[in-house]
Image 1 (cartoon, rainbow, N blue to C red):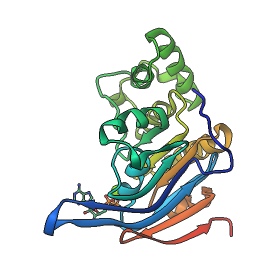
Image 2 (image 1 turned 120 degrees about the vertical axis):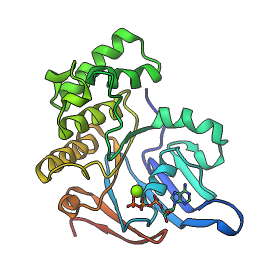
Image 3 (image 1 turned 45 degrees about the vertical axis):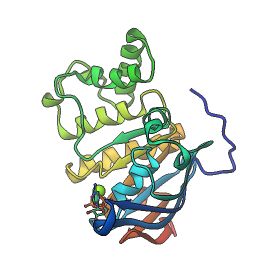
Image 4 (image 1 turned 90 degrees about the vertical axis):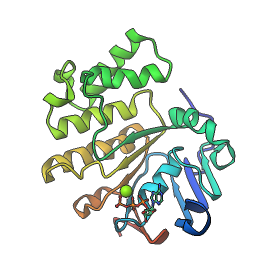
Length: 237
Ligand SMILES: Nc1ncnc2c1ncn2[C@@H]1O[C@H](COP(=O)(O)OP(=O)(O)OP(=O)(O)O)[C@@H](O)[C@H]1O
Ligand SMILES: [Mg+2]
């Protein structure tokens, strides 16, 4: 799939985004006017304390949640304007997700877990199986196509998640603490893979992490505290 998009504007952008959970006196304001953007081929780390709004923000960028107010744009779609019922369609077109717990279907093989995402994106079964095998080789577990997630290591499962997430080539890859349940070395490998998605394949990658050992991979580190962006710095400066 290709996308009509002006190269001069960010792939994903949030302006003055507010997110309230609940209604009436129990309303909780999780995001308090957040501005955020990420470009094609950029690897951005989103960091901040527990409860600061990281998952809320990437859920809004990833067409999972609707902002209470503010503007959110992905490529040429202003997603803050669309009805909630339209979000799943946009999510499928634009976003691949990687979660802390891999979220694989335990009764399906590695290859089937990736192929099902392609099927959802309209591929026929034969092409989906072939492409799933290719993507699993890309993340270097081409020898585990027929393995069930229960028979894979944590790092291998996370590789399957990465292959599934980029199946069908969505422009945006969002990861919520993808290394949290991994040892340091495996976490480093998974981070390198995510970094390559941005640098070699041109995905826009936004990763939530507390893990400061991987900060040096980032083009930019965005810090969020109590629902507000508190600092944004170039990780190389
Ligand atoms: N569905 C919900 N209903 C009510 N409040 C919520 C809901 N989801 C999140 N919150 C609140 O919004 C705030 C931000 O939550 P969020 O999950 O975005 O934090 P986070 O930065 O991802 O934290 P963590 O690092 O622990 O994952 C928290 O105070 C949380 O309690
Ligand atoms: Mg979270």
